[in-house]
Length: 217
Image 1 (spheres, rainbow, N blue to C red):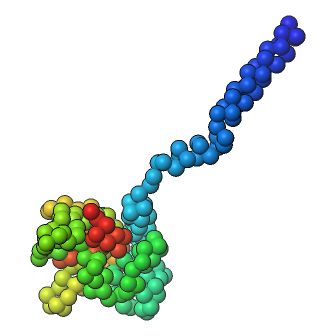
Image 2 (image 1 turned 135 degrees about the vertical axis):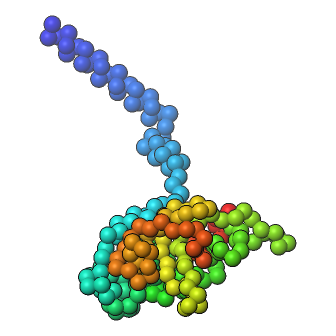
Image 3 (image 1 turned 90 degrees about the horizontal axis):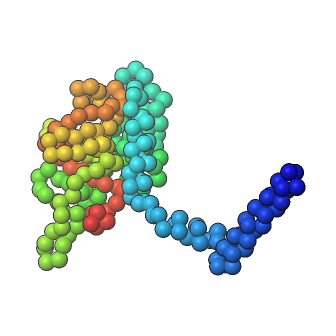
């Protein structure tokens, strides 16, 4: 009985060695072939950047000022990233800081209008923007803002965009945002980082630093 067990193990090992030898004969480097097949599954770098950025800014929800004067360790970290001191408005600094953490080039600014350079604006309330200019003045499909894009709200009394944040979800009526220096009422002089629900009609411009307009096609 003991001899039969050893014989079975010997035959099983022989079969395994035969299979390995046969496979190796047909494939010069089987490990390389497996890796090449695996590498055919491509990732989308744009989607990856958006997801990385989304994780960063949503992780900041709940940050609050220390004394209600644009201060506190985290708030001052946002401001320091754009070379501003505590006490300054920080909605734009927050957006810049998050993009910097995600490795996305950005203006690194605390000045809200600077987050909307012409080559980064992908949506405007006043006119329908296409994804990129087409030949002979024709335009491509209308761009729909996505998570990680930056929204701007225009304040007539200041005659400029004076509050910004990130778009989380977008539809024709409402958007979900993540923004700083706001509060539950949606003020531009709030006390921390919040997830908000705003009317789409309240948004003036949207910019994207993850891709250019021509890359949206």
